[in-house]
Length: 49
Image (cartoon, rainbow, N blue to C red; front, side):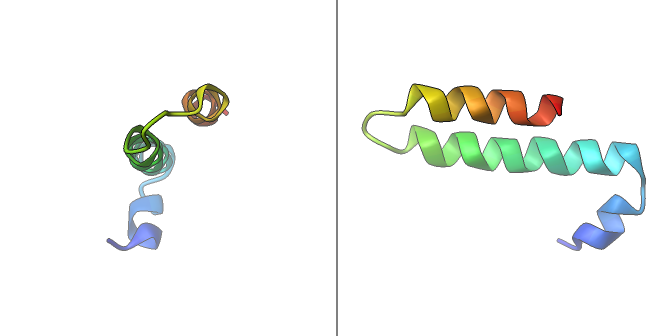
């Protein structure tokens, strides 16, 4: 995946990458035996910035 090419689409590209990164973070956190609530809150707030 070429991030520069995706970002060349402007705001939609940035939004897509943020959603993709957020999905990856949530997926990693849910693999833990006990997900950390503060980390999950931070992950959900991250795309809103």
